[in-house]
Image (cartoon, rainbow, N blue to C red; front, top):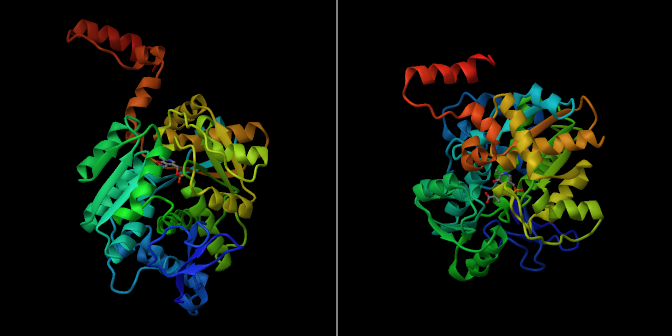
Length: 433
Ligand code: F0G
């Protein structure tokens, strides 16, 4: 077996498969698969300090692989076959921004946000998609497919277009934001709208994937997680390798938390870090099967009918729950759930720091507030929250959620008459300035 391979995550099985295996789940036991590496043989004598220096130098490089915030760290995702081309849109390189007012709002933590909305298609999915579509292209795939609440589909459509591969998207009918739908259409994907929710659309897609020879790029695909894990390399580099106490992400299909856990585990194994942050995953209350499983001490997930206005995380049967559980166990992590009202309050708090994001992303910040209130996160803790998607991903809900009072103060329809304009400005703007 070569030095990079697929491996079943179930310890009792742990079977290995070559990287070009067609399956995304263990053919023997149905378990989830990881991409694993024999790092000592791959890295030779290169140690962590040398790699840190190399990654730093690449920041000023002109090659697309150096400019990408994923491929700059390529020594830690060495699965691309020699000669294969990397499919990149210069993803990653997203800002880490201190948000002190939001930190106060959350209960007095030192808070920074890692804004993944600043990616080519506006979400963290681009980190995984560059890896996954690179693999799809290396395998000669003709059609890629995913089920999505909107961001994965936008990202897949863009990267597939770049690679010259056909893209088919399955989304729940009428349940994803227009902005995300518009992205997939513009990048030329075929969009199949079916079912009530993500879980239904995903099940239908999985039923035809093999038969029709589609290349599935949902986060069940372990190559997605290889790209997404680089977020943690970038965060630590931006903090001069100082570990935060907590690293917080919203949870839907639980790919993101799983990838971050894997990245952290590898950094520790390779001597980059000696301590781990506590990983925190926050779900929307109406779509929180993972939270319920942990809160009740159950050993299996029980699917729910998902309900939340944070449409990106409206998922009732998360496929990666075993990997997510592994990540929380490794980091002594936490899981929380928040109501939609709490999500929109967090979004409003971030806005006061000049930071916008889509509703699902604000779940991470809402979760921090709840965990500080219950004493599970201590006052003054050093916290990084991942904001997963751009503010303009879901604008309709933001407007719909504003109260009549806020609207009366902020959105004025004024006749084109100078006296009326003056009166309106005096009453609403000048009096409160
Ligand atoms: N935040 C946003 C903005 C998302 O789009 C998603 C997932 C998540 C959080 C949750 O991440 O699934 O890795 O736990 N969106 C997927 C999609 C499901 O189809 O775009 P996760």
